[in-house]
Structures are given as C-alpha cells and as structure tokens.
Amino acid sequence: MGFLLKIIILIIVVGVVLTYLGYQIDFDFNVFKPSQENQSENQSSAPSEPVSEQQLINSSPISEPLPSLPQTCSYNQNCTSGLLCIDGTCKTIAELYNTDCEQTCSITAVSLSTSDGEKYNLKLGMGSYSMAGALVWKLLTIPKYCPEESLIPIQLTSKSGGQVIAEQVITLRESETSPPISHALSAEKQFTITLNNITESCS
Image 1 (spheres, rainbow, N blue to C red):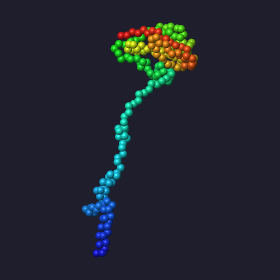
Image 2: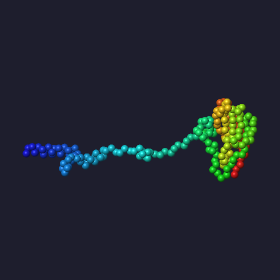
Image 3: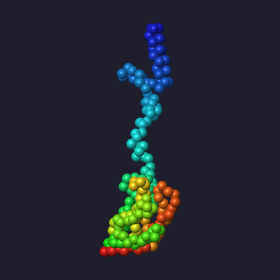
Image 4: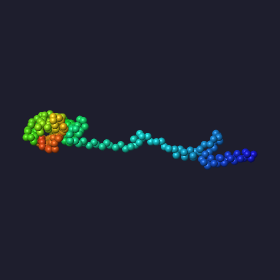
C-alpha cells in the first residue's frame, strides 16, 4: 500500500506541474498534449509567409517614364545611326515638317547667295563648295509638307585631303542668313549662306 500511495502522489505532482506548464493529460490516449491556449499562442507566434517578389512588384507605385531630352551635337558623328545633327540637335529630316494635312507643298527652286559673292538658283539635291573645296554644301531633299512650313535643310561637309572630316545640317527659311560657318578643322568662321527666295508648288 505504501508503494502504491507513492505512485499516486507522484502522478498527481507530475499532473500539476504539466498543467502549470500549459499541458493537459489526454486520458483517452494516455499521452500528453499541449492545451488549446498553448496551441493558440504557438500559432500566433509562428512566422508569417514571406512576401513574394511578384507581390512587391504589384504593390510598388508605377511611375510615368520621364520624357527623353533631345541629344545635342556638333556633327553627325555625335548622333546615333539614322540621325543627323540638325541645328545642333540629333533628329531626322522628317521631324522638321508637318505632313498631316489635306493640301501639301513641295519646293521646286531655291534662290540663294553666299558670302563668297556667288548667287545660285538651285533645285533640292544640288549644292556647291567654298574654301577651295574644303567646305561643301548641299540642299537636302525633303518630304511634301503642309503650307507655310517651307524650311530648307542644308548639309555642310568639311573635307581634308579629299576625305570627309565632319558633316552637319543647318536650316534656313526664306530671307534668312545662316550664322557664320567654319570648317571643322578651323576655328575661323568666315562663310555664310543667305536664302533669298523659295519657289514652291502646292496641291
């Protein structure tokens, strides 16, 4: 009897200790398991699932792309392929003109003069030279454009020893004179072009 009493007392003590620690005795299966309160505490302390990269992307604010600034240049070589250095900015000839209109115009003749004392009456695609052939200029062809937007692009080519050193494009309207132009290898600005008259045909 004394031994059995000791075992009962021991079981009671163990039960009290386990109950204090948050466990309860399941007499049906004869095992110890955590109490419901302890289970809820364990569940609440469990780490949350990591946020996926896609969720971060979806929750990030979408910002509008910034408009690209025009690329400045001195010569065509400063521009990416397909662009010309026109009046100090990389662009195409087509960007100079508005062509979205019912009536369009084309240039049939251009009258101009140079600081060399020469006068010309040319069609687009034609040109001449200055500085003993070191500076070549040419009127570039353009698309048909909307009325009142006549603008002549003039390509300036600097040469040395027969080789092209640099090219650039300036634009002139009727009655305008170009800024002083220099050869790419010379700082002296001594050449100008004046666009005296534009003859155009519209339809």
